[in-house]
Amino acid sequence: MNEDLVQEVKAVHDERLAAFRAGNAQKFGQLVADNLVYISSMGMLRNKPEILAELASGDLNILSVQTEDLNVNVYEGTAVTTYRTEMAASFRGQDRGGRFRTTAIYSKHSGRWELVLQQLTRITLPG
Image (cartoon, rainbow, N blue to C red; front, side, top):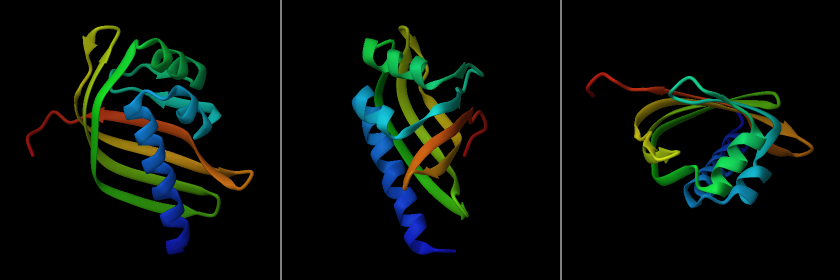
């Protein structure tokens, strides 16, 4: 596996999470594909315009996001990441925080990596 590509993906991943944490819809929007598919831990299917509007309006409020065990596999122009997330967040005033197992898929488009799909699954078992 090309370690340089893995490091590129990790850098974009970290940048995206920092923008998400900060509620920076503009920066977040630069790092995700126009045809983004986002599946929340509640099973809600979201797209890029919906997520950007929710970040900008404060409907989606991220207090903290911590990740661990990031694994990156690169296949040609696609990268699959898996990791655990601990998040404190609310959506329209309802607590949506917790621990999650997360899959994020990036695609290299026009020379840059962008998020094309993300799915969160709530961890309900201990450990």
